[in-house]
Image (cartoon, rainbow, N blue to C red):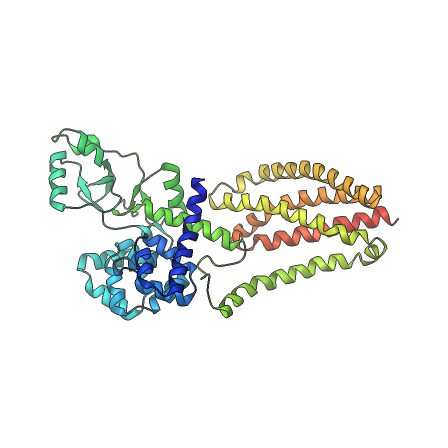
Length: 453
């Protein structure tokens, strides 16, 4: 019940907001919007048509503008930025941490970027330029250079005095990082250790050197995997010389995981996860037309196979009724395997070393399912059409197609991955082609051999 309530909350917020907007009462809209977190506001904005979105965006507290822009897709962000004055954009950017600002700044007009850089002090400007120097989707682009470091040759009381003078800590600070004179990463010390040990305790006695640092060039996917595997709250980022450059925190990793999930869901349909729900009709049409055209081309391949057995279908009309079952069941079975494979590839669980056992396992699962479902389907066909031969043909064809679908579900995404393509984006089209073509071919071919001799 609690889970259902959580999922209903965004829909309830959207309904209340839409009702208030329709009534023309902006006061309730403003109050509702500004009780939400930036992420919730971003979700609501993406759920609204452009006209209502523009009204609500104008009512968002200016202090939240920057954070909200980070929680919407690229297309929606582009439209929101277009509605903002340069001064508003500069003010929004000023509220962001360096790593968050790096995510936003390249979407801003050049004149606004210049104003933002001018408004920053030298240290923060150099930090931003450092983060922007790294490739997108790497640890360097994710990291925040604002870290608290201490030396190993000091004591707890010295560190505590330093922290009091500093006055505040960056968000999600659970450890301080210990560095050498050359700023090389040596390890970390938990805040809890500082508070529970004697003031004169040397830092090097409390040093935790077991957490490995993240290389600045590691991919975002690898960073997310490490955080998930080790339950980290934060992690240090170093260069090739082990110089501490910054840190990555769990809030950034949650965003990566969410983006990965959206990418897998949308790519399976040939769509971009950053596409605006209310994007212009012409733009949406062009994007989808590419993959639909490819699908149309592969559909002709399946149709040509059916055409080869036109004479068989003319003599046995029941085949036309039954053949979609074989192809459809194969498609569903292949999709199940495909989902497991795409997830395994994304998590690094599938590679050359385990392809053969995966193929063997999925082939056996498909064979057993084929025997069970083929028997059921054969009995139904026998009762329906009173033809033992037809029932045997469709049972065998279904079993064969389920096995072929399972093999394709494993091999297609792996092959695309090795060829450098995103397996989530194109696998379903090729899988459908295999299951349709082989489903029609085995069913109609067996029918020709067995029933028309």
